[in-house]
Image (cartoon, rainbow over the protein chains, first blue to last red):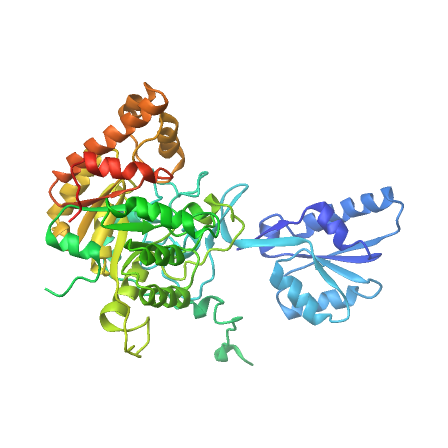
Length: 222
Length: 307
């Protein structure tokens, strides 16, 4: 899923400094699952903002709406119905959702309440880890299901570097060395030979470095 | 045999036990620091490594400092890391290095930027050290760039090397990785500092088993311990270092000048033992910010005069 983290309250307040009528829009997909921007989080943030406005003796309209997915135009149409009477949208979706709203409502400022952090998994309750960078050319088949692009701090294709010790990455903390994991796993699978072949420099065009990406599915076009 | 590209290559191919030293460029634009260090090392080393923003702290560029050394008759080994430049810049710098007279190039991944004074920076790692080895080797031997059919009329003249850390994990895979580096074009290897001779001996046994010492020149890294504090710091804070407790204890018993003398003695003993190890083609002396001690170490190890 796309994992996000709510921005600090002070930053959100600053973003809304000039706005009196705010429509808070949550998203019921990824950011709901990671407890960042679903209906519950929208309610909590709205209450916080109302409280802060009351304390500062400012009049603010803070209405709430959570749609199924902010990244799909048909769900975003629900926002159009609620928008009249508001001068700004505060989106609690990922960056994709924020931009979808911004393109759908060119006349209204759309502000982000969330920092989109990464594509990851819920490793255990309360712990999300990054597992994919969406590089557009998946190599997990070669590397034992462990991604060197997103999980090695240097995105090495021929690791591990000389800083790997005791299964940990040189950047410290408790970061595991992805290359140590790749080797251990391939050994268990009897496929260590996968690492013998030279790995040519990666074609990063599929990973954003060729410019913003686009996927056309002719078979889906109506 | 073809004429050697560099003095380092000449010494290694002659079968003599080679010596390289290390010069860390200054955190300033002062050329005199580089020249002073270089001249100090000139008579005791066959070539002098110039680090490339080591530990991710901004310093004078490795290629500029290497060119300064070359200008005063000291042969440099320019280090080149993949952290800060993409394939365009790396290949361009390899051409530039050769044009400036630099003849040895050491290809490295580079320390992560979190260690340095620019921790908020973005790293590059467009290609890794293995791919860089292949790239500069293809440039030098075939006159070709990565993925380009164009053949250049004057390819760079470079003796290409790589590093390996026998003390990093997973241990057995280190030799596999060394083999891969050699297959990617590394002609010489400089290892991480050897303090744990027993472990290094095991590493070399695996190297010999695969015959890798016959395919590339393996130079063992050594570092004189300046104080027990420095040794502990290296053990605890420097990624991939293995400093046995008994060595630290030998230095910890002594103070100041005596501790430093013990550090030098340990280093000389280590070099003598490494020299007897089959497959070790030389030593790489990394006296970090203590370059003035290198001539003494090389002399006491019985490695002067240089061939």
